[in-house]
Length: 387
Image 1: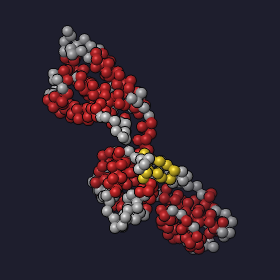
Image 2: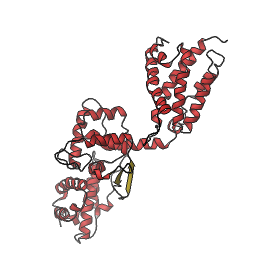
Image 3: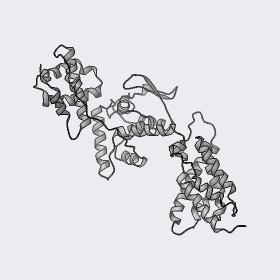
Image 4: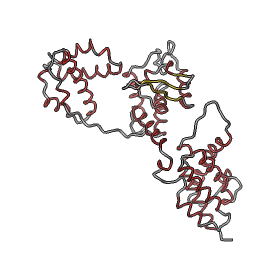
């Protein structure tokens, strides 16, 4: 029995029972398998021959998948009584190296500018909800449970139901998906222009076209799966305390706190500032992010007299300082004024809402900017004479 004969029967009896994406993948693999082994008697394939076929310079993981397809063919042939054994089971696969590509916010935003209208929404669902490409393509509006405010999907291997909370960010993406035009009523969250689900091949081609445009601008390559890997990386970080996330370091460097403590005889007196820094570190260590944001806001309000001003807004806009570092200090001060203060104000003044969310460590981590601010505070205090 030839490999081509096995392929033909498999296409008729088994392939239709597989998922559409798997059908497409197997279809491509069968073309190559037919080219390389189609006229061979399946029983004559040897372990040595197949092991040599696995040895390719590039596309090692793709070759693993092609071997898996051949193994499915021969396994089916064994069940049909056409073969006595499946030699592919003994073939050693190429070792895969786990990808550790984390997509930065800048890369993600730039890629979206080259990705058309629908692809950015799929990218957002992958980054915000951790959905795999297949789950995104198959996602229907019936899986969006507004009563419990969750997305319901099935695990791609176990079939176990998974509930993904709909955050305000995810809800905003879903609202954009609702506005997508289609020739018929949209059953799918991200339909093609006809209103049907994207095929894996169509989606993959759309992604590759966007990647080509993106790479022409000199950006580094990343895959769609790397987006979900980035989501997983962020989930891991969220489970760590902020101190662990920073390798044990506090929000304020301990050496900077000791430097301020040594200056407590100066005017203005940094005693309260030193204590505020210690309390920020204590809250940061305990993952008390609301308190960190509020204390950071307090520090910003506390230090302007050292610079000769009444408010930090005046510091950010008018402080001259060291001519060599003046421009960079102003940029950092404005970031603290615009971002750190805004987050602190939001936490301090926002009233209760029907649906709430908590700040992430990334939102309140102004540690580098704080260190620059405190460094300049310490420098100015050292210039002052003791009372």
